[in-house]
Image 1 (cartoon, helix red, strand yellow):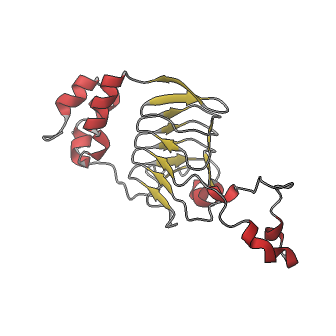
Image 2 (cartoon, rainbow, N blue to C red):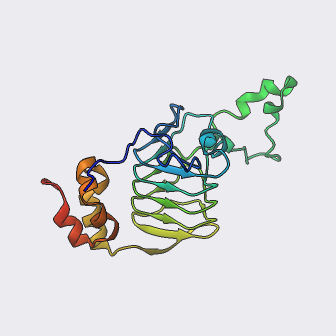
Amino acid sequence: MNRVPADPTALHPFPDQPRVVQLKPLVTSALIEAGEYSYYDDPDDPTAFESRNVLYHYGPEKLVIGKFCALGTGVRFIMNGANHRMDGPSTFPFPVMGGSWAEHFDLLSGLPGRGDTVVGNDVWFGYGVMVMPGVRIGHGAIIASGSVVVDDVPDYGIVGGNPAKLIRTRFDEADIARLLALAWWDWPAAHITEHVRTIMSGSVDDLEAAAPAGR
């Protein structure tokens, strides 16, 4: 049996499917971090992920995506640069239009932000999900298609809707704690390769039995 792990450095893991890209070898921005094997699927130029799917990213907040995340077509992350003033009569960002209005850029500086947007490991995003600034999405979560995520998502939570609400968790609290302790996404690639079937379809007990020494 072939025990060679998949290549985390391959931009297109399936050569005959250019619509799928791994994010780690793709991203160039210092403000975006992506873990190994996380991928984005889009029939219309997935290599434009940084410009088309991460919006208003003027810094300094980061987008951090963990390992083994699956991002469906049209997933978008709205960053803090989209923020406008809301304490005056108008929300319009006059200084960005130039001319003498640009002298008032101080009115746009120091707007409140929610910090980094952080996605855990093994998160599945359905088609057309929108993630708002500063959201933290836990390990093993599932985000239903079309969701607008405005609040943090717990580990192994399933959320959906606009705004996204918790539908249920994938496991009970005890099993979630066991899964987080096992953190299979941090296992050596060779060990993951040996136990792919258990990781995909086994029970939590099976996963514990397959864990490398020390887990």
